[in-house]
Image (tube, one colour):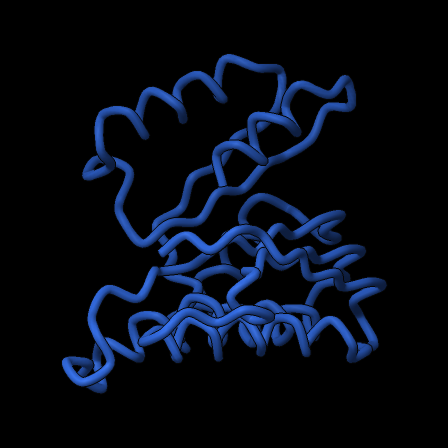
Length: 171
């Protein structure tokens, strides 16, 4: 998400950038803390919140964060959450599979639920080319990305547009 946030803050239009992560800010790696600090030197309002978007209960925390910051409309959501599959097919456990599925599948479902309480102009989901050309043993990663691809074909009353971009596989 940093690369996208860094690109956005290079623009002239002042904006609020909210970065969500699974780790509290104090426990971020030092290079991530430095990146966040660099973003905060811009004219933009940069918010980091330790909200795991792949957790079914995260929507409440996200709605509270938006209300606290008086955000009534979201111009753009970049859904970049993901965890790469790590193990061979026969070694996978249920938890291994859920760890890969939740950030993308539950995450996008939570963002869609968020649209019932706040207008979202645009949502871009970062998928993977693995949804088109799957790699052996990474069926959960492929399935999660296929789900994101399919979401962009649907319409939602409070989301003006959804786009999914297939990037190179990260696993």
